[in-house]
Length: 194
Image 1 (cartoon, rainbow, N blue to C red):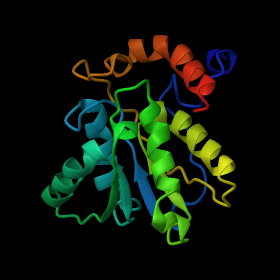
Image 2 (cartoon, helix red, strand yellow; image 1 turned 90 degrees about the horizontal axis):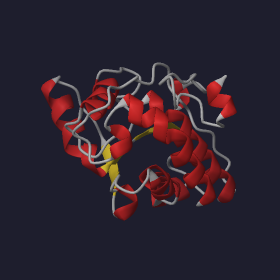
Image 3 (cartoon, one colour; image 1 turned 120 degrees about the vertical axis):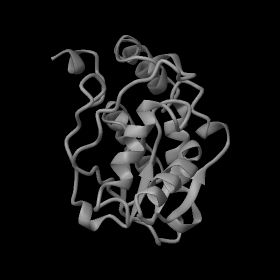
């Protein structure tokens, strides 16, 4: 298969990733964007997936900074409550540097005081199915590097979000650009230890 030949994480080309673990065991949710702004179609799919999912919406959340207000507004508009524990901040979460934002956000999560003190130990993740495999790969790398006893939970039905030509990131403007750029992007991330 092409994905294996190119050594790409699951879901990178198809937007489909298999669930991992039992969502009922999750004690928090990490929500990551795909694209540079909350109003992009790619991110709207992620926001809807989180807010309308009865298994995800009650979980305390750590979210990409650009998605915080949009998640709260969508939840309020749907009569649902969300608890956002923290938002990812700084250049690592800016989403503008070759997807290093994903790695930087996971690093912020795993080094967060509430994770370090054991309050949150069973994170579920929500992001586009196209980015879920790479996000999982990066999270597992950090778990290993920090020698943490933790397993990531990937809920069923990670959304196959639309791409959006209005994104500031060229690789999230269209599915074609995503597919063509993926081998190089992933190779560069691996070379940088991400």
